[in-house]
Image (cartoon, rainbow, N blue to C red; front, side):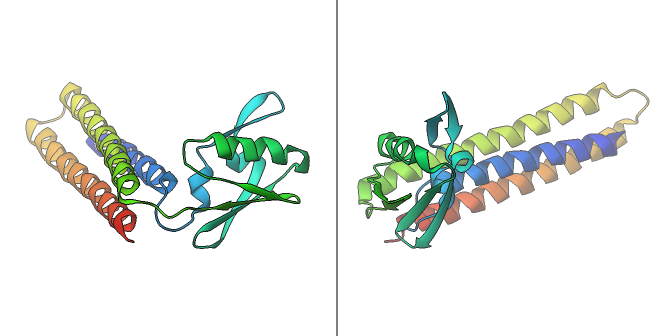
Length: 182
């Protein structure tokens, strides 16, 4: 029973790390990444859709994103959504594609983005801690299991927790270094 609890908690902790990784990918760094536009919502067909559901986003150059709408008649709606996002982007339509040049970032913007990265990392750490707390509560409620077995399971749980927190910290440091790179 303790093995199943540990397995479930490890899976939950890894989900927290993956969520933090996705959030880090959406933060703009020095080079273009198609994941940057995933958080932008486009109003199409009377509902809000994420960018990756209504267009193909590619990064042919380090400072350029190219957005190709699946439905060519929605080009204006996609351009408007990009322009109105709080990312400071100025898209231009060329036929049926939208070019989004990325302006160079100043020091203040880099620091703001670093703060966002720290917040996303903390959210990931909180998710990992919640998984550990939940597993610890389940271990304490087990019947018919020796105290020694529960103690060793808790030690294993703490070890897994520390590994996942270290992963989040290393991802955060890498993203921060990428942001501060000029």
